[in-house]
Length: 253
Image 1 (cartoon, rainbow, N blue to C red):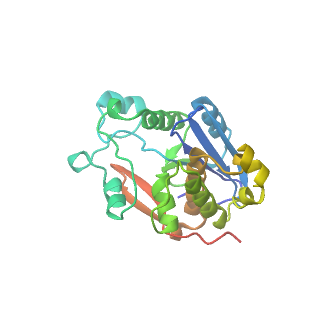
Image 2: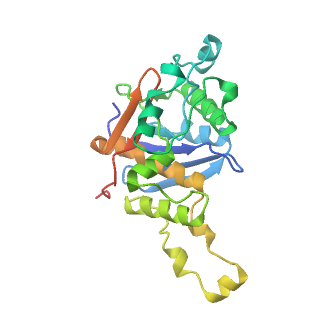
């Protein structure tokens, strides 16, 4: 199991789309924001490769539910299986009433964002990242479904992530958890009658859905190392495990 240290980076990655398609966020041991950006796969991998000790949380499944032997050799991972093609972790998330994606049985049935996730895991494996938990491996990865993580933090469904109100809501949750990010309430402080008339809203103060997903994934990775009692592990090693917050996070001291 990864031991929390001041030298560890907690990196959240969302392959959900946009231009460029990846969003990533990195936190240090004190929840300070080290990096928040967007890029292509090569950019994310370059950042991950530069970390000597890191826990990477990804908002995507690592592989299809069932893969062929040739695909297994390609990914360097063990075959995954689940009753009736359903992952145990996804079923457990749905039983809690939380939103979760559905991982298909075949690579070509996955949506583009999920295939980007599959590629990300494969390249992280090539960089030496191992699935959590693996003894004292310095670089590990774990799966954190972001929307389920936000729902777990709030304890109820959230407003849609593509709406401005939903983005405020998610950013407030992260700020209240102690992350060193922009205060979303500054948005209201900078709104004037003149700016409203001209449509000049301070949108730079509110993060994009992808950035918010990456941030909550990074927060969950930090919890795994610093407050393992505040996370729940769902699923099984064979079909894949997910890690989620247990509920509202107490801000770091």
